[in-house]
Structure formats: structure tokens, C-alpha cells
Length: 411
Image 1 (cartoon, rainbow, N blue to C red):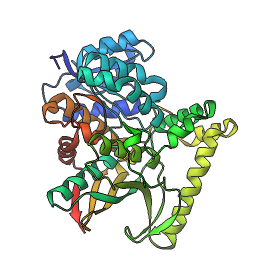
Image 2 (cartoon, one colour):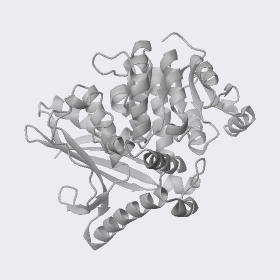
Image 3 (cartoon, rainbow, N blue to C red):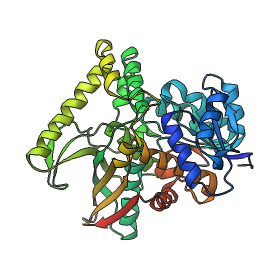
């Protein structure tokens, strides 16, 4: 990539998660990092910049609009990396992805939308590979922890000469909520499926994000919808709201790496709710709540009730609530040699806000400042990638430096 005026531009700097990401960059971007802030309104972006203090006073303000492709292309040409927090991505994201692919500009976002990423692959993969642009979706709680726990487990097994991964389950433990943007994205996807029922098959396909569906192995687990007790985790488990997205990202990583995790690799995610009667009751409550929530968002006459209990896009919890949150993702895996490992990514901070802003900011800085150290899948020059295949251990190191737990142990 030829040198650009800026190292990274944060698009969506006036939104809630955009503001948190900007605050992270102010505190943790090395001196001399050239950062710009972008949005539709110069006045609002300038107000957001003013709240960041003196360290951001000279950050350029860029006017760009998701509905104005020319402004997106102009923004992309100015920088090495574009960071986008402007969602729902299905509604606003593709023009920016195309602009970055065309200009050879790296891109990171927070999407958890299967249909959007599938369209991104279909429309931008070939062009981005030709220009060298690295389009890296899902660089927040969706799906950095999921992608990295499996990558770390596979690398540890390889280093131990323990063979390939087979059955792998990630148990999510968390306190905190999902952002208003996440809820809006889920609703957007449900509305799309309602308008075009053929999209349901894509959204529910276990290999929806695969580069070549015909080359995927058989025997993959179905999405887990059951409540059960796990002897492995010593806990009751419930369906995990992001499993139907995270699992697709992890499987895409395996496919882009030429199935280096294993040809017998099977992957699923569930939510850990605790042991005993309380854990059991919580698991059934979570399962019922997920079903009711999805039904409510899909029915217009109930959708307004959802709006009253979840944050709107651009809104979020207080500083205190964000600080009290946490997440822990534990992947238990069995290798072809019979060895078992537990791989963990965990951090303090509300997963949908505080922790996500750190993961997004560090993903962008990895590409902006350490691109030469970042991996690429075999035979690729760029393209629509995943956190594991585009950032890998560079991101692991950066997250550890931010206080995240990233570790693997043999059981």
C-alpha cells in the first residue's frame, strides 16, 4: 500500500461505540499515529473531537456519508485503514466496503450480520484480493474472542504435535448487554428474511460464509438450541445469542486456512449459566427469553415493546455499568491424538461496549501500524478476511497488552 495522508479514519465517530473507540485511540495509539474522525455532519464530528481533549485537537474532521459513494471513496483514498461503526451494516455498509476494496484500503468493522458479510464476500472478495485491501469484518465481541480461542488452540496443538482439532465447544460467560447497534442489526436481518424468505436458507446455513461451500466437510454440528448440563464445563448451558454468527466466522477462518484446524473440526457455541438449580433455571430463562425476543422483533405489533427495553443505536450504559461488565470465552477441544485443551479469551468491561471498543481499536491499530506482521491466508493478497486470518497473533499480543486474558492450557 502506498503511503497515505492518515494511518486510520474512524467513520461513525459521533455514535456511542464510535465515541468509546475514539477514546481508546486517544489513550493507546502511539504518539505520531495519524488519525482522522469522520461522519455525515462536520459540526457533530467536531463536537465529538472536542470531547476527546487536547490529544485529538489536531485530528482531521472528514465529512462522509454512507449514501454518498463519492465521499466514501475520497475518505478511503486518504487513509491506510478505515474503521466503521456505522450500522446496521446491511443498510449502510456495502458502499464503504466496495470503496475500500477499490482503493486498496484496509477496513475493519463490528458487524454480526451473516447476510451482509455474505454479500461483502460476493461483491468485494475478488477486487480486494487484486488491490491488496484487507476487509476484516467482526472485530468486536462478535467475533474476535470466538475466532482467537480456536486459532490459539489449533496453534498450541500443532506446537505440541498433538494433531488437529476435532470436537470444539466454546462456552460464553458474560455480564453486560449488547449494543443498540447489535439489536438494530438483528432486526434488519429479520426484516430482510421476512421480505425475502429465500434468505433464511443463507442465514441458517452452517457454512454461510465459506469461500467454497462444496469443499466443506460433512458432520458439522447444528446450531445448539437446547438447554443441557455440560460435564465438560461443569455448568448448565443455554443457547448463545451470537452463536449462529460466530460459528460461521470460525468456520470461514478454518476454510481460508485450508482447513488447518482440521478436516474433522466441528464447532459450536453455548452460554454457560452456572451449576445447580440456579444454573438450570437461568438456562431455561435465557432460552425462553431469546425465543421471545426474536419473536417480538419479527412482529411489528410487539417490536415497539423491544424498543422500550433495549438501547437505541447510538445509546449505551453508564461508565459504571460498562466497567462492571465482563466476558469470558472458554473453548474446550479434543485433538486427533486424544489430547484435550482449554483456550480462553477474557476481559473486564461490558462486552458490547467497553471490551468491544478495545478490540476494534486494537484491530485497526494492528493493520495501521503492524501490517507487515499481520498474517494472510495461503495464496491471498487481500480479500474479505476474519480476525484470525487477517490479524492472528498480532491482535493476541495487542489484547494482552490491554489486560485481556489470552491463554491455552492442556487438560
